[in-house]
Length: 211
Length: 164
Image 1 (cartoon, each protein chain N blue to C red):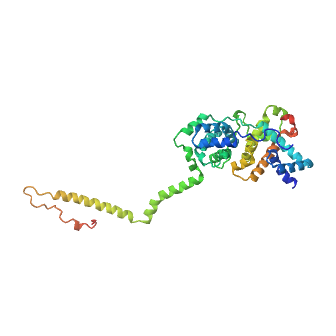
Image 2 (image 1 turned 120 degrees about the vertical axis):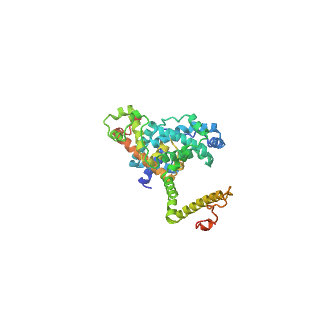
């Protein structure tokens, strides 16, 4: 009963030595080496940005900007092994620069199935049988929407921990906050998500056959 | 350590972020504390639900798009996007205000300066015309004309604005 039975931390795509060597080549202007980096981190960055902005188009644009900036500023990265935190931090700064402190507009990936935020509240007291809802994939949509409802401060660390599965230390380096603050915010985010999922599933919460 | 403190470590336990000693201590507590154990199971269930249902659904933009951006030498507007930040916009507004207000300030604090400048221009132009006029009049008389009554001989002494 100790830790998550499922995925756990994401296996690093490169060993520290491999990453060091690869980033070293990128610093020398090797575009092919940078492509290897992009192949590994491109999808993670676009999904991270999407979780912060809620906009697919913005996520794609900001992902391009992030990698272009990363390539141009790579020489400013002192420790090659901290590339991942550095890259996610560029992406996060781009998001905040784009929105300049305003809360990003949020929308579903599948726009035709997009729900208004208030719909989550309606789903929290479900009129449908939750098992049917789970079968219909609605729980997935609800959780997707829950993430967008998290306050930005909690959302960024929650996405990095729960979806990107970064370590708390990496998250601390990425968001520029103390380890204690990150730990506390992740816990609050998990409680927020737990409470909403619990409200939605009602008495079915905790039943293993729902997952 | 109380239940509150143990409870705050539950997410870190789920994420595998506690040290071996911390993890052992918390699990010992969970073994004897029903409310904390319930809280842990509840958070764990939510974490597993999120784990299974949330995934990276978007694909990264095609590499070619990024490569084209990398290889272009053109300066992109995005490089100057920082200028749109409120603090830089404010600085730019102040600079523009200063730039346009200096002439007004100068003319307001030097009321005679503009008049003096116009006077100098006027006198210079008049002197130039006189020089031209004098040149024409200094042409040697032709034929029976021996005296030119229009010849200007000593206008400089009559010119109160003449610049020496």
